[in-house]
Image (cartoon, rainbow over all chains, first blue to last red; front, side, top):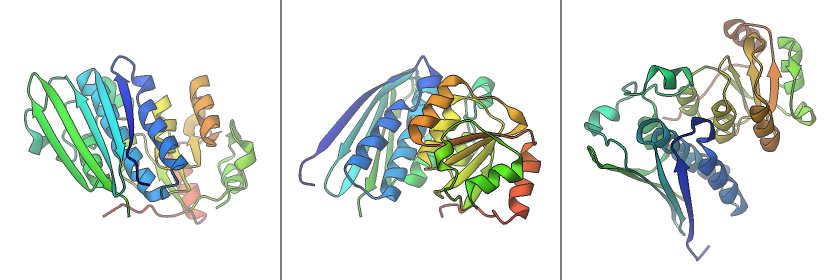
Length: 141
Length: 117
């Protein structure tokens, strides 16, 4: 695999039901590339949690996935409220999600920890009132 | 455990992908919290849940799960059935409660879930 492959998705923030569609597309594309199931799963889950977060907290955003020779990079960008305390947000169980979101099976404070769990590197840049950009990489072994 | 065995044990009704009843599951997860499900890594697993929305099927797909059992006979939507069929996921309905359904599978040998360190 010598050429970089790039996938771009707009994540609709209005419809929780459709959240995850971009992650499903990424998973299908990575399968076509013949990557190992473990790598595909890690990328898919990390991106899925990020996508759900963008819908729940930020009114949507954009997702860019770049497949390189040695790694896969996922960049999630939104213009939501931002994260005021990233250290706290990284703690399992901490969440600012509404009760409505919790009844849908999310908002348990596992999103960011799961993204970190399934990626090899994760960087969060966030400014309150401006938005958040999360960059994750998964190494291809 | 074969999915067909699971169906018998839970006295379940199959809604999708009956052609996959011969496949095996090696672990199970009983949960209504999808983020907790996503914290587990184990493929060819079955998800038992009382939560009914399309994210249940997407979560199962992300985890490479091949079977979802809706307990207390909760009926999935047409969209959920379509998503499951696209992904080859067997959907079943059981009138048992989550605790009881998990207990039956556990006591019949379907044990364990591995958490990624």
